[in-house]
Image (cartoon, rainbow, N blue to C red; front, side):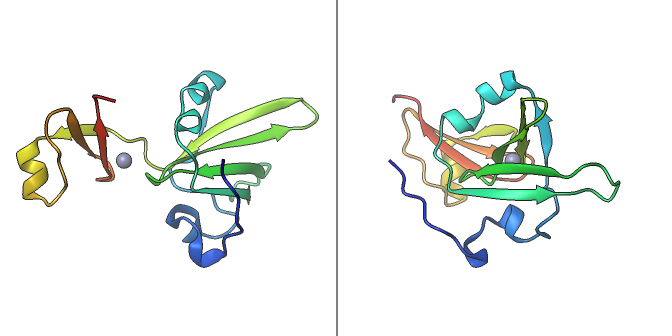
Length: 136
Ligand SMILES: [Zn+2]
C-alpha cells in the first residue's frame, strides 16, 4: 500500500520539474490501449503522480493528463475526453533501448554486478542503468 504525500517543486522529477508547467515532457507520445496494457504502469509503483495541463504553441487544444513517474525517468499518462467518453494513453521520457553489460564492464565502471543470474543493462539512448536478477 502506498500513502501519497504532497511534493513541492523541489521534489518533482527532473523531467517535468525543469520545464514550464504547461510544456509537454520530453518524449511525450500517444500510445494505444494495447501498448499501455504492457507498460510499466502495471509492473512498477510510481514515484510521483502529477496532474498537468499541457499546451503546444500551435493552438491545438490543451491536454489535461494525470502523469505517473517511474524511477527510470520515464512515465505514463492518461487523459479523458469527458464528452466522447474516451480515455487517451501516453508515455513520456526515453523509450529505453537496453544493451547488456558484461560483469567485467560493469565492475570496470563501478556498477554492482552480482554474477550468476544477475544482468546489468544500459540504455543506449539515455545511459540509464537497469539491473535485474533473472532467477526470481
Ligand atoms: Zn533510455
